[in-house]
Length: 274
Image 1: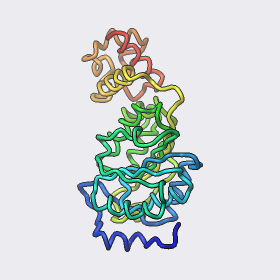
Image 2: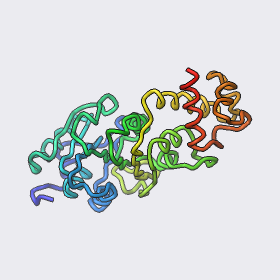
Image 3: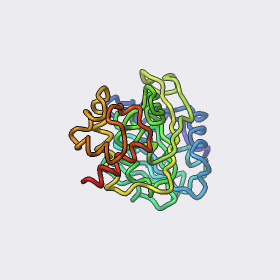
Image 4: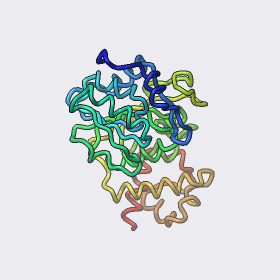
């Protein structure tokens, strides 16, 4: 890290970068933690990293120090944009910032492959961001993402467990998923009300075609939208009897008992049936 860099707390004070609840901001200021998150992303040499919601730039500094070929920071908060623009002068040609809403931005267009996303995500938009990136699995390498602990557990949950649901199916259908780090509220400034966790999400080499992904979204939305019902009831809007018959799945089962492979069968059957 260049010796000229001031402390993150001084940066926050100078830019009046108080964390805003409306933006889901909780900053990581401990370099030991941000360095560990960067390490969890694997070897970054030759990798182009996109970071969403860099805030004061703690994780950004760690990613650059870890050897990322480039870091592209996507930030909605103009105050934080100014911070990252200042930081860029210490890393000529390696750090850029884009002031944009990540939900409306195609991150794969921001840098060349091989690319990764590493981020302490704004908690209020973390889930829709992830689902959007899962649709682009062919263009992304590893995703190393901070979520609320409960969301990370939902991503990695096994069938017939407390947290198993639509997010687990979509995530594990497209990627290998694991919780690789847990952090207490006190690790953040300001502390959130809950524990947080880093999930490592590595897209499979073969990804579903867009039409099949849409079919899976429809099937899982219906199946888990009324999870207390048997599948023959919850999937009724999707011509459930014919769908279940085509996928060879018992309609008296409930959504949380189905494996990822069985949901794949349902999605393919739904697509085939139109």
